[in-house]
Image (tube, rainbow, N blue to C red; front, side, top):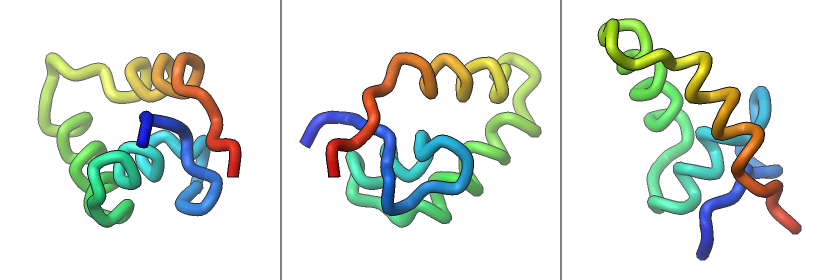
Length: 62
């Protein structure tokens, strides 16, 4: 299954839900991990990375 933005596990754009579907993980854990990585790491610009993933990741067909 290719990486896509999720329609089913969507809060803002479905990026974290799509990553969770792709990896077979729980979407809530992916979201928590992404927020923690963004907040705790100065080197990880979380909002910019999320917007880039939103633009380049295709939307799910289903």
